[in-house]
Image (cartoon, rainbow, N blue to C red):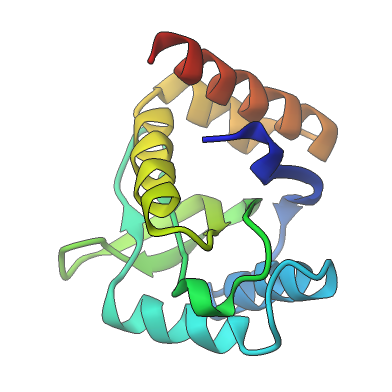
Length: 158
């Protein structure tokens, strides 16, 4: 996964979004505003989330990895949001709800990149100390550095 997918402008720290829909609206709007997704992107995210939930129960906090069909995407990017208070997302592959404080949204045009990104993100969020650090960062600069460093480390191990 190329680190060029990361963009400091697509990072929101300490969001006060109070619902899954607010999270998807905020991150989706950012993707559209920056020209990385088309105007139907948010609808695509919400539809996909209804059909295939993206919440993951990991330690120390829940993580969500929303994404949608590549037809809504203009350029490959990853957006990140940390939340002040947990927001409920349905659990991936389950019927439970997960209290999420870290959201990693990805917009990818290529199916292989999509799968690789998902695998990498799942590997990244298995690292408890990384997740803990991500949800406590105070600014997007630090969040970017942390995430980029973790992705670089993954690539070097591969």
